[in-house]
Image (cartoon, rainbow, N blue to C red; front, side, top):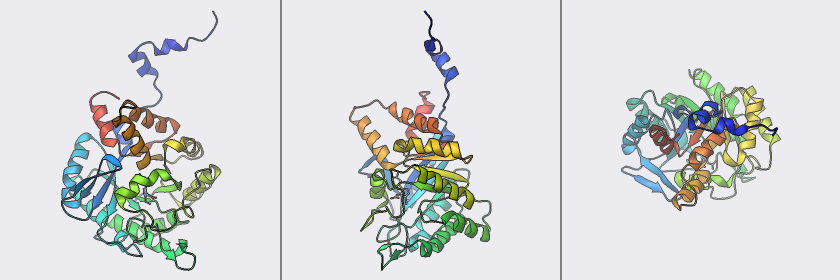
Length: 326
Ligand code: PBG
């Protein structure tokens, strides 16, 4: 018999561990938290079982748990009490995520805080920038200064990393310049430059209360059918000075993660978005698939080339790691 015996390396658990190519660690995980401005709220998001909107006054408890589990970084999303046409809550020095960041830094100074730089959670129309009344579309260049103000106020609140997700052209250049001019040369930009106009964001928009009141985001987010366009976005973000690149969503875009990995030396971040979480969580809860699929999904993102994963499963994964199941 003359054939390869691939099964030799699969014979025992220790043998399989020895030749495993991809590993998942706690430091790979970034945990998203939705912070609400109202007091005393800890409300499960109906479309995302296990994920809560949490008030600022209850946030310390949540962060204590996150830190105890060994999660090393969080990203905050804000649910403000009031929204307006120009998203002023996004760049208010005492805005909701700015305050969440200060509180986090006061209690857990080492926990890395990433803040999402976008206006959609703060505009009454739910779009990521200012609306041009003539075209009824988001206006790129007049939005940029507001994004810069947002990023600078986030850095001033102590954010370790600025993560702009608005998809306006030139946002990395402008935010980099704004951060540098305000004494934040040392703060990295994790760019969500490769962000598709995806239906997988549905549950997030429930959680962040940021569904657009008219139209959609297809004039600024990318067409899911495109692959080369991702490389053009990557190239301009690298030239503009991005320090890390997010690909979003993740699971239906593993080919894009691989492309970015092959074309860039920057750390690559996979955003395992709300719809992906909701689908997996629901299937597990219904008993359709085993909970192990969570790890399989995470490993697939890393195998595709991701260094880091933003995931609502971060706590579950840390618990599994602690139980020796990963
Ligand atoms: C803000 C933002 C969105 C997500 C992250 N940042 C929503 C959107 O673009 O509509 C989605 C994340 C998720 O679905 O988990 N622009």
